[in-house]
Image 1 (cartoon, helix red, strand yellow):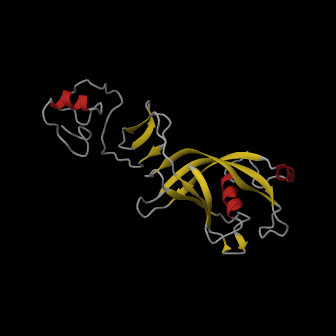
Image 2: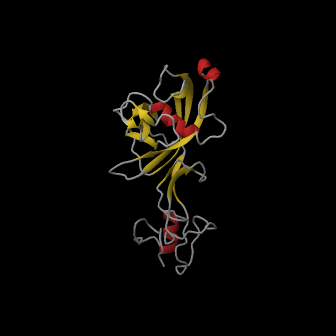
Image 3: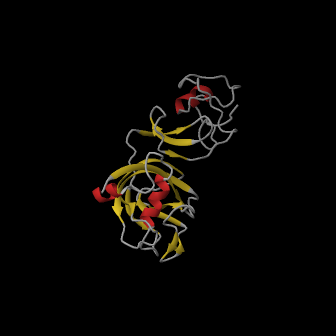
Length: 225
């Protein structure tokens, strides 16, 4: 992923410090406003946060990222009344996401601006800055990742052992698919044991034979009895 520019488009001041303020406000190890010494030195720090991503096609999504941010002095008479701020994003790394994203897609990751944010009110362009964010280009890299169906029906993209989940469908249902943890792939189970499966085609053949397999949304995943 790469940061392209700041959002909203009709605002030319205050977008970056407003967004970064929301992120550092949730991290007790970072002062909301940097010290004068930090601003003079261009000190950098890292902060992690979750950004909301709206889409007419895919619905509400989110991404969690870590930004490297830099402290800068602000121009004299800045509308916020502040003399300095965490203002520049110098690097970004991806942590996790929820919802569906496509390779090459440009998204807007944003946060609502809270009432205590000094960059919200008295804004010269919009009066009150309601939200701020960044345009991000999605670039997919899934080396050593696998799609896995969890016990509660949630589909995730994770490492082969199920750790380090980088994407989640967000769908959970008590009726899906009822898979238990002690299933051994490749071991047949009696037809009367509903929903138990190692989640491979070999398991399907062991349970239903080598002929045509029953098919619902996915072979053998579900409450087949």
